[in-house]
Image (cartoon, rainbow, N blue to C red; front, side, top):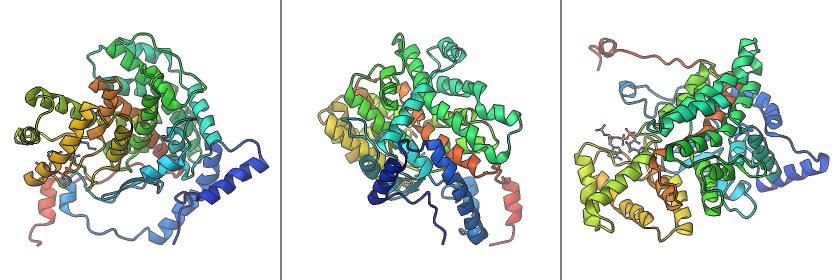
Length: 464
Ligand SMILES: CC(C)(COP(=O)(O)OP(=O)(O)OC[C@H]1O[C@@H](n2cnc3c(N)ncnc32)[C@H](O)[C@@H]1OP(=O)(O)O)[C@@H](O)C(=O)NCCC(=O)NCCS
């Protein structure tokens, strides 16, 4: 049995040992890139050994329904960063969301995990020290500026262009300065790919707050953007660029929000798109631009916008403080209209999403009396029963998107069309981590086989 060293998370005692070792032997703790340089050769050997032992083993049959059914449940990808269990929900390198909230470093006075620590965890399987997280905050702040032509590109977008389209446009344009694209054109060796992909990935994540802030400011008329504060963490800077930097609760929300939206194993549309496009050796900007276009779909990331639109429409039809019966009827009218109830259901999950629960806990702590939060709670007590009775959805429970908009609205970020941009900023953490590992492990070009219906009919003619 081979066990990935990356999947082993340091126990608190091992963590203390590591920290004290760093402290006693060197005043400077390893950077993220230095840790990866140590871990990558070990993981290459680990993968080789796993393939040698298990490479020819079968997961079971592929059936025709997999081809027509969106490949639901088909084992097809490798990603160590996070794994999704249908009943339990997501684990980042083996850790649940509450464990991440407990173990990852926090900002002084804060109680939510810093996404910098989550990125470190996704990449290395290790919980970083507070000092390592601070270094990452500083590194990202130093890389945060976006090229002037990208600023101009955004400034020229009509405010009617959806923020997600603007977001993907700007991210794609960052490929102008891609270290990987440049290194590739100069003939970099395959074994060295991960270095420039790491640099691009760090640049990508670092530049997103400035891009998101500029889109928000342009589209919603918020005026001149403040600059990045190199002494502040990533989420604080993002909040500042959106105009909420003085609100400590909003900053804490951003820390939690980015952490829980970062990654959801490898097969969801945005994560898989990033991986697929990256497999053609498109650089991280091109790959993540494509991922954003997937996230912009209403069955994926846009659902957080759709939830708020749906709740507001419901209020306009049945009024505020409506009875359970009126809400139930409205849910039925949505289904009878051939529409989905946004924020409910999931392709993998079969229980309430722990990302929903983490946001609910946050709301209970910070905004228990918020009227929209109360409506979300009311809807939570009604929709699952209706979906069960309707009998189609395999999972009647709420997902992450059922809750996020309510929290943002509470603090004054009321522009629903912007919500998926925040999801996109967060999802960069998971996609970037995956791209770095894919290039480090030499992941090949993805090329599954497609079939025609005629060929399926011919293949199985006269076979039971
Ligand atoms: C997430 C989602 C796309 C998963 O799709 P899936 O894996 O195909 O889900 P299921 O296998 O349960 O779908 C079976 C049927 O139930 C329907 N269904 C699933 N969730 C539903 C919902 N929330 N409201 C109404 N119908 C739903 C599907 O549309 C499908 O109908 P069909 O047979 O007529 O095509 C789906 O649950 C959905 O559309 N949810 C609402 C959008 C949303 O919240 N997206 C964010 C996900 S994190």
